[in-house]
Length: 295
Length: 152
Image (tube, rainbow over all chains, first blue to last red):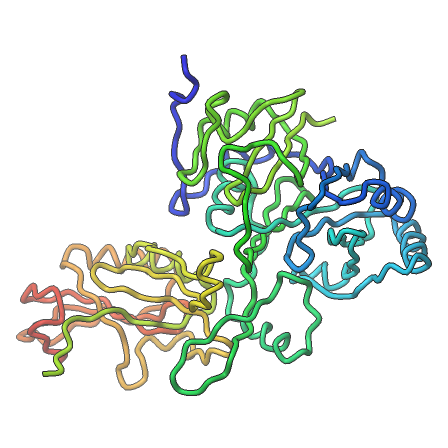
């Protein structure tokens, strides 16, 4: 029987919250990043950062998909003494570590960012263990992304930016050059008025932070530029984020809880494919995910 | 002649879009029709950030002000000099609205009894989460909209 005949329920922004999928994703496994020179990138991640391929896997591409000016970033974590050593090695190697901040209260403190040799943006944070602390992606439609990551994958929205008056007031300080905000957190919008020409209007760039399990958070930033996305029927690709969880239950969600904006694979009946025990998923913004069974 | 043809919408300020959407949906039975500027097309065009909610045939654009929003005292139920948006419900639904306001803990004034021989039966007055003043009333003459309006 063709699996596309699966009995699906359709969700969108009007669907009331449901908690059936809560807890299906349990943790970060790592990420796959694209780089232009594998040896150079390996030196950066392995020798300077001390991060192995079990956390950041590198693939070589002639034109790597890297978005340094967007909200997209990967936050890597070290116990505090090790983080100090990493920062010293970066300084010795001449890698610029910038202090800028995102909008959650904790990230006023965790405010160190650098880029790898290809421009992949890395946040450097202190924590209990070495690994991927969190990641942020961008998407062209924040509402569909929220529907996908909450209704299908079971996350809860932990924080919103750009939905509250105070966020708009805060963006004015950034517009005046008095607030060092991380890329992707603010933007300049065209101003529509006939009264006076004021050029551009500083605004918060809309963001939603989704938490899947305690400490397992994905930042979703609105893309401020139109970008080429992979085709809607490509489910496995790079760069991608790797998450752990109950993949049998997640597969069931992907087949039965559907978004009109997402195409299903004819093989699986959902927006994913299977390979080597993993699920490969394309989200509604063209971001790739890999879901693995928790170790 | 410069006749206006219809009401298009009201743009009103709120503090928090999510909170305001929920209030309008729950208290007024409004539909969230769309959010503007949560996709890249809107952002590139620099459209205003707002949520459109449809309360019966009235479109509200819930908009976020850029900075401070002066809020009236929380116990003020009617707008200064009577400034407000007034909505009509049937006599039967009026009691449901009052019950809903009570259940949500919304501070309201009323039900206020209007003069017996006038068109209005009763009204309640309250603030939305953005400090905008709302009236809900039922009319003895059953007129649903502002046509043949006698605000008394």
